[in-house]
Length: 633
Ligand SMILES: C/C=C/C(=O)SCCNC(=O)CCNC(=O)[C@H](O)C(C)(C)COP(=O)(O)OP(=O)(O)OC[C@H]1O[C@@H](n2cnc3c(N)ncnc32)[C@H](O)[C@@H]1OP(=O)(O)O
Image (tube, rainbow, N blue to C red):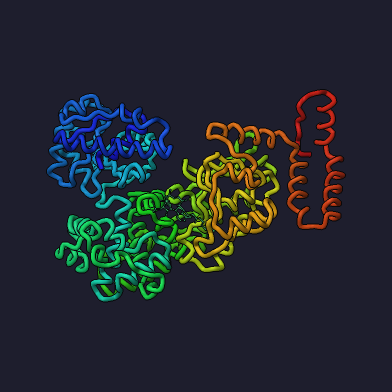
């Protein structure tokens, strides 16, 4: 883990001294960084060359040499308190007074670690997820003595190396992510121990019916069953027998060849969709939501932070606060109360904050408020947007952990934004994807088996809203643009992409067809033959071919993208708003009418426009040889 953190830090532009106790170990870490940077360089995922980044990393076995001029020291030694304390005490002795000392522990107390130093107020947790190069999340954890200033320095530093930090405001065991995530595995293990489920039934239900990326036993095997065991044991909590027995038998999961599944003599993870059902998913989710409520009620984290943590750290399709608001907190509370009555276990005891919300009637989205407030300016979780002084509405699809794939919520947020925004304040809309990998990789596939067919069919509303939005829309594509991603782009008026972006309609590979308008919009754009070939074969190709086929307007180099989109936007901003609106309407509606009717539509629009102030302004500007100043009147 240490070398991964060193790599991320160097990619972020910092000089790094990487220290381990033996030359061989530190060299091995360096070689791994070199290999990883080479791969990133090859895939064009770093701005500099691998060698340039490597130049910023030096290795040593001498702790004083490593830390004597450091501003930030990040420890990633084995998870044993004694080793942590020894390391912190040595670092404290040699690091400059101003230096912040951080621990990458995932389970030990920051306060205890800090007590080995004379500067506990400058000690903080910086918990990375594995591998740090790939995983975006960092938990910034306060110890008892940590000052806001120290936590802010750590938070800002994490942002500066392109990570997404969340604050963990109290030093609680498991911090934010594991506090909520561990019950996902544990509750299933309790149910298995009580013969209330089977491994396959639990995994299949959570994946195929509830949309989680892995089942609880699959996840346990993946992360190591001993890790789950120690997590419980360290906190003095009883361990589910199903987990303890596996650890005793040294069946620790994938790494040992056998866990809940058999990876050596069996088929490994082998549950099927038909195994789902029967498992009490709400029981698991209620316990997790109860934990989330406990974190909020005790000022450890906000609902936003918890949900970002679960999405980025646990690859969950949505956070548990959002999920709780959807399920209904009254339903969750009722479930917990009945479990508490039946089993008497502390984990079912509803936390005060959850009870308070329900008593106040704030039971979730349907009530207008739950963990989140949906009443005024409901939150946008999956898109970022702003309108600049020129009226350019920039919409960024932001679900980077899943290639900006579109969940039901993201579809709804785009639709809501375009319906709620005052179109008169908008000159044009530009859609793009957050991060540097994708515009959007399509609809969220994990939602396919979890949702009702009617929910999935509802997505077309958003595409239609985009298509009919009365202002010009532009898709700025850089990276994967697949499935619903290209369908959103096709609903836009103009599409610009970087040359190596991947455009395609892979839906038939999933046994479905495009459902956001591609079959119809593509056929109108590129004809039946090409549409059928693309859709039937689930084709994906680069933007140069997409331009050749007429699917996008321009394929440009990485350097040219901003410039060309900027030029187009400038033209749209300075164009005559009423005429652009009319042009869009006539161009959109014309093909659905007979030529005669379409020409009549155009003629009528022309006639109306010829009475506008903008037309007089256009003509006057032409005569006076100046740029027109259109007012949209
Ligand atoms: C009505 C509309 C219907 C549709 O749109 S159907 C969906 C059509 N789209 C697709 O079939 C594309 C699916 N995605 C892919 O094929 C690949 O991804 C890419 C080629 C885009 C990229 O591949 P790579 O570079 O190897 O990345 P990675 O590890 O596959 O993706 C990173 C994380 O993103 C998740 N992800 C990507 N696309 C989707 C998606 N469309 N729905 C849900 N998750 C997605 C992955 O699973 C993974 O996640 P983890 O890191 O947890 O393993």
